[in-house]
Picture 1 (cartoon, rainbow, N blue to C red):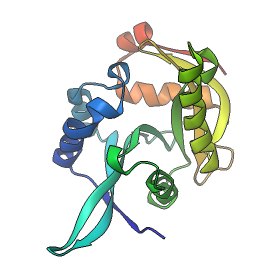
Picture 2: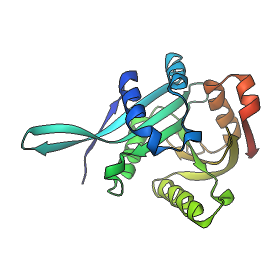
Picture 3: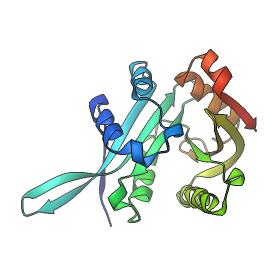
Amino acid sequence: MMQLLARKLTLAQTKEIYDLYMGTDFPPEELKPFYMIEDMWSRNHYFAYGFYETVTTVEGAREVLRAYAYFVADYEKRVLLLDYFAVIPNTRGNGYGSAALQQLREICAGWKGIVIEVEDNELAEDAAVRDIRNRRIAFYTRNGCHMTSTKSFVFGVDYRIMVLPITDERAEEDMAQKVTGIYRCMHNEALLKENFKITAE
């Protein structure tokens, strides 16, 4: 069984991963400029983890990044948004994503739950896109996440909202309010008025 070591990242490490991987791991419309992450970080509403595997070669042992998770934190409602989560491209399909997600239950033990946005599979423009979205939803479901009835429209992208309960088994309740609260930690009211809305509860 693989052993992943979760490490809380510094802002510099978070930026390094952003520059190396996130431009290809996420579509442009989903990737916020890094200065927005820096702003939330400075207000204590953002943090990130890297998941590392120790690899031994003839040159010795070293830690290799296998996955990463970036979070927006709403301390008022005690919920997290999994802002970005990905496995490093050349290691996908080997169980690292599931292993990292399961570790989040321990890492985030002081929180009620983790909110997860998934692109709306019901609004996919073709079968291939729908299949990708369905597989992503199935991955989260296999790892203990629940689909809620809440949907949102954020900066031109339609999302369905899932949740991974941590200390609150009813974490999916009042999800529209929780998602709205999270986005208020991210953006000012003027920007939200133009680019964010709850489309179903």
